[in-house]
Image (cartoon, rainbow, N blue to C red):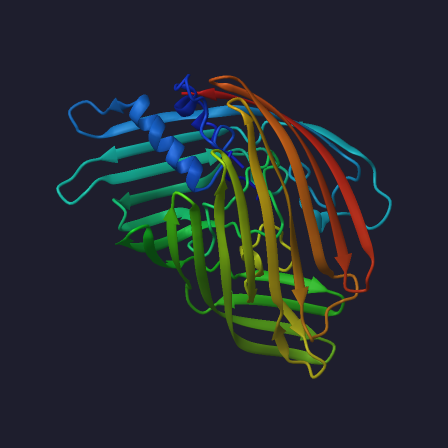
Length: 407
């Protein structure tokens, strides 16, 4: 059951692994939602359920799943989004309970493979019903073309994140402190042998942001695309990845002391990976820190990444995250994923007292594969938000999910 958060969705894996009745589903797979493991499972399905476009050598797979989530939350979150657990929206005052049903995680997938003289060309489409504004509407998650393992262009997982280290939660968004972004990019890859690989990309900066806190209004815009690179080693024992990110923004703040504008260089580093235990268990981890990289985290604790110094100059805040999850398979049809994550902001500048300083996210679930195309699961989630002034607020959620595979 590898890989969510939050920000999830790809149960096409069920059919691919359940077809092996002797061994059952893979070690951490049968409820995989997104990330590298889910993509690999979709490729397996292409081989098992393959169809060919008449008159061509192009193989394709069309599939997806229907999912129903039942959610009970102790405190209704601030804002319109109630169907995923976002700790930064925890109310600090009295709030009503929240109960609901959602089909928004339901997903549609397309995958194709066309052999050529210079290597296979893949295409990928993924949509679900989960825009993060509380509505139920078609949302494009991935749309890309890939030439073998060398080049990819389109919308997919950012190079700065580790799509091999995403814990699978039933909650759509997932752990607060993990990096997770799907955006438009151009990425090149070099395989070095013995499990080593290097990837580098230019990516959509998504920097046209506006925020207000107290008497300060801040707007940002991008000067160039974000640049990301990573190196990873992968083997039977698991994998380790080191990733870096570079950004260039222009920020303008309007405060009682007047307007201030500044060109800002942002950067971040991430160390992540997975370690295999026994035959089926995995420990997943990630440590991330950077200035001006807040939007790359799963929880929008600091999207602008800016604070105002006492002299009126803009300062980049440092946003850091730590995530640790353990994935255990009890039997071929029962599994659990449990762990925690935290995300925090540090700065010497001025931020409003009611701004958030830190969030903590923890979850544990139990998932059962009933049939090769149907699973049910239950998950308990807890979160705590802390403000600059020291005030804290907590929230608790129970989620029950049923997912049915169609293809």
